[in-house]
Image (cartoon, rainbow, N blue to C red):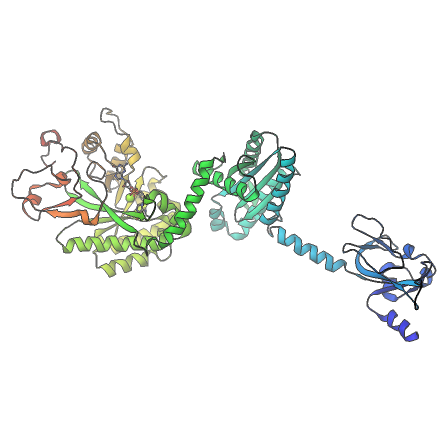
Length: 596
Ligand code: C2E
Ligand code: MG
């Protein structure tokens, strides 16, 4: 018996015994420490006075002596000094032979640290480590709860998908730690900007979702979106920097835009995507047509992955014409995707998707290789074009292997570098002038030409245009569309032509569709043009050489009435793009130079 007492005394758990009346008869050393009662003081007192166990709702846990009992998982022990500690343990009746129990033994241990760790792990699993906001998992749980109660009370719920505009630039310029501080600053502004019952969550990256749990009217979601956009746009003090950033918000509303969390999030995301297209610092409500676009985007991405290996990609070529000589001076390679079920998919649709998922890199490389190979093959067949223009996405241009790719394709195809012209958009060039400049310089050293595509739509700085190694400006077709021959006033078009001339750059007008446009451009002495008026982009097989008998007079049969110089008629023949019937040629008398 004595050895049993010694064992109980030295055990690592708290042990207490009571007699049949429920009074304490034993308290080991650990139990003394845990309860703050000494055994001298505790012995003989009712067990419930010394061992005050409570559950999570602070109700006292009562236990009799005639059956075993485990303390509930959330049990606490209220120490003599009033402090509560988390415990686990059990109570068992003590029997000497058969009959009524003669008392009880309680074994318990302190699990405060372990329970705190479990809570911490559970918290980490449901919160974002940087901002401590609920993460997507917890958000979905909250949305489901809110929807559950909204359904019962016929209420509306709003979801705001918040995405920062140009956050990457902050990370790139100020560093990741400043980027992190900014995300924290934004998260507190979002939390301050909504009610306590609403949930602000971070989805990762620069995306946040705000759950508005009670929406009286949809307009309230718009008001909150406006308020949050204003709050985000205020100055952020990050380390020693004053940082300004804007955001775009997409809004979906339960029940109209979705009955479950996933649908509401997807639709708010689609609305955000649309808001972004309208420019920074805006918000948009979801419209069902957007969802189709999201699905469309996903399926385009999947199919595009296999497009190249299934030989669904090809290049078409649109001729470029010199407006003085009428000669075809080159062609622009334009990518075509023939999808097995959708048919022709426009590059305007799939190039942005390819840029987003990175597929533009292998695709762009294929395009460049194929265009260079094609112009060589034409030349070998006696069909000479002075340059081939290839569109280069900003993603390709900024990629570290870009220049190496151009070099190796030129050497693989054996094309003279001067026959290659790369078209870069104005925004791609102006985005980061410091890295653009050396890349352009290397291209100039290689002998490759560079054209600014869609000129006039971006924000070129004149000083950059002066210092950059570029050869040509392509006037965006939106400006060509504005040409009305009856207006004699200078338009954007002739401003660009004059600018090009002063910077010593070639100017090409894109998207020329009518004779009026052509005449206007010629009068303004624009050097070159391309557009449906001359020819659409055609397959490589539709480009051929035609030889004409001297003075055949057949100047209207196929497209290149424009390149019908005497020399072409009599010697090597002319290059013909496609076989469609052209618009009537401009009579020589009208144009004055006899070549058109
Ligand atoms: P872009 O470089 O500005 O190409 C001109 C676009 O205008 C082409 O559309 C062309 O077919 C069209 N176009 C030409 N003449 C006329 C005209 O008279 N009227 C009208 N309304 N349109 C005309 P496409 O082929 O659909 O290409 C759209 C855009 O997709 C291109 O604009 C270019 O930015 C991009 N793209 C095409 N191919 C490639 C490529 O291989 N790589 C990259 N990165 N982008 C490409
Ligand atoms: Mg182009």
